[in-house]
Length: 200
Image (cartoon, rainbow, N blue to C red):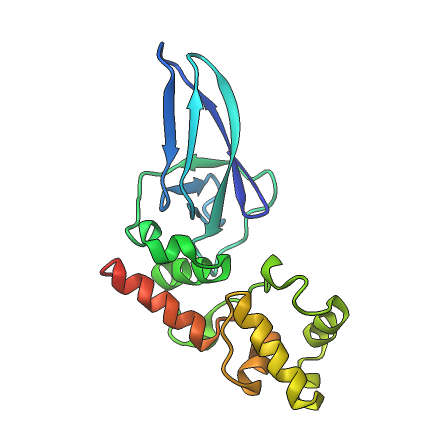
């Protein structure tokens, strides 16, 4: 198994005489051979149909489990682990953004003590087209510029982020998002909702 940009390439061979459907369930964990590298957890179920002795490679959506460990590089080898987690099967988890999925996983596996203890993430493809690229690039480099923008533009940013699944309450939270790229309070509310649904 090899990791490529949020996906694991899983090589399958069906060694039985009947056509079979194989499902990689959300919550399945892949462990790297290098103990300093993060484990990867499946975030969405993937089902594959294989004929007898057929070989195939499928891409499975994953997220890192261990926030403080090294990120796997492209080509890192993994082995299937047996641990399954309840939260990954929740409807809210399956329907939410990749950012919130990653924050759920880090909440469960890395136990950050406060909102400031999460590692930052990108804003995702969801925001592409909602905010001009040059404005996003400027805010990523100089988050303080947000305080110089007119109130109308700030409101548009907050609305665009909300449409992309990144709820932001005010300009201070907007500044913090561009500065740290960590979770917003609204994102953490969804995280805790998912954990309540999973009784974690």
